Length: 183
Figure 1 (spheres, rainbow, N blue to C red):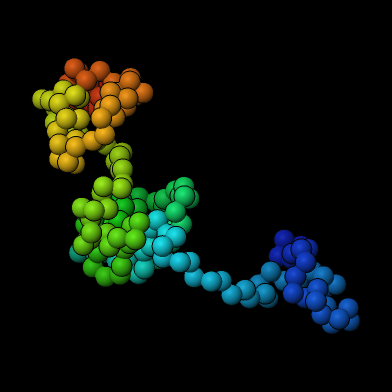
Figure 2: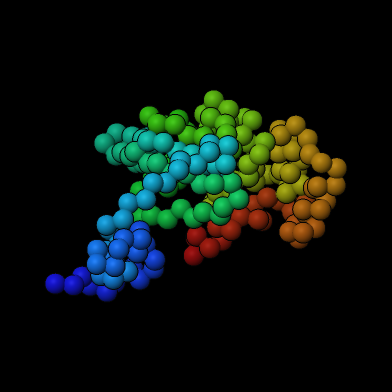
């Protein structure tokens, strides 16, 4: 019985190299029959390298054995249902939370041991940002820049203009949630 067309590949394959009488399906092959060896990526080429990441919260185990490799220069999304470990995995990558087991490397740095150094090369904006409500946006920026050890001259003015921020407004004015959540 022939296999379903969706499960067949009409592209040239290793079966095409066989003599005509020995080709399965005359150039078509079952997708699951070919095995291809894949070279492991060079760790220097990876932006993110997670190996067996596990974290438990009581009886909940999320993430549970996550392996993930993202090459430098690749934009990746992180999708999954609520409670599946997305935020926990991000916190492990940022060195904000220590995994129970496994290894997490970001830009070639151990996510836990080298978190401070890694943060000099990372930017992270959580879905819900709560800054100091009594400070202005400009005061928050100044504080964060000082905590970071300074910034390039002109960078604050450039970004303030690009994002059309008023550094005199209180930071609570920039919260996306305050008014909408209470409605």
